[in-house]
Image (cartoon, rainbow, N blue to C red; front, side):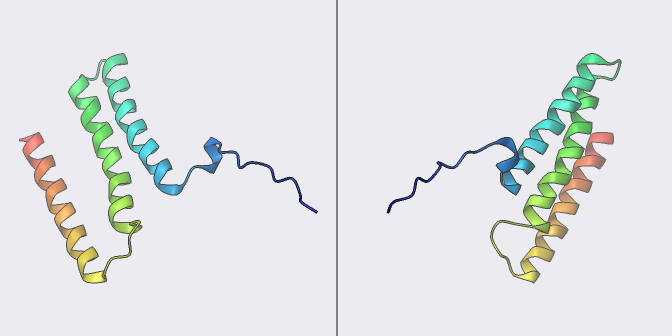
Length: 95
């Protein structure tokens, strides 16, 4: 006898890990822009702060738990390149 099967429902709770990371990145940028628009903080400063917060989520998605398994050496090199890029970007923005 055939049984009735309920269709799968997708809710916000059912989002995958990387979908949540994308939302966190967008939310960080929106938060920074909101702070820049709604407070005495300059818009560019608010967006820069949101970008720094978003970079934490990008780092997590790319290096701590990438969707594709990577070799340890490549992960270490990619992490080094990421930190150098982030440092150069912050130094040039503050100079």
